[in-house]
Image (tube, rainbow, N blue to C red; front, top):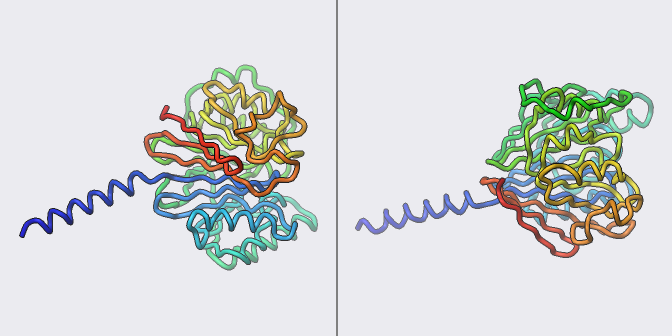
Length: 333
């Protein structure tokens, strides 16, 4: 008579262990030099970062929805808009026609003016009116079930927290301040157990130095999405090298981002094991591009491939390339 309760307890234990073993998955979707990064927790909650470009016969929206369905999603729980530029928020109207979004997260008002900026903002506000909208500040969190998501930059401000002294800062040099939306990018640090992922959108050089100098406010990360598609307007070594990523993902296009100087800074980061790219960067040539196995697209115009990170709470993870089915695993650090 005691066998049934024992079997029930064993089932519940097995179920709990199975749930604990599930990975947090991050899909880096090729939107030709924009951003569309889809995060799915073991609890099947989802966070999409940006929506790619508008137009192109719904190309980017179709690529996002196809990937979301592959991940078993019927909706997006959180849509984070890093900033109001066409390659990041332009595809929002097309996306909403194909898949519902529950929560919209942004850095607040668009600080740029003029007709194009107004049109982008109006399209976003119309989309956000279909769900719940919130504007977050640096230091606040996004309540994604199954992971901790801390906002580290928003509307030109950075997180106010202590960090370890960064010896690289003695050589830091600033560039001219960027007055555009790029410098106001909403960036976040995601933690899943010991695994850490950083996405700071198109945050610009000087703002990144503020995150890294005189103290590194972010600490080491497991995976770093290269800032601003690998353009040399972002990505100072004082930040990139202080992050000490095991793996970097570059969401560049064939003719956008992936500049040789920015690529070299990432590639030379201490402790980096591999740099993966969504596209072969034509300007980089063979010396400033990842090996073929680590490229999601090798042609000038991609076919919607993606790179997928599957992370475990112990800090170990793997990266999968949908173009060639190549997978590489990385141990916990």
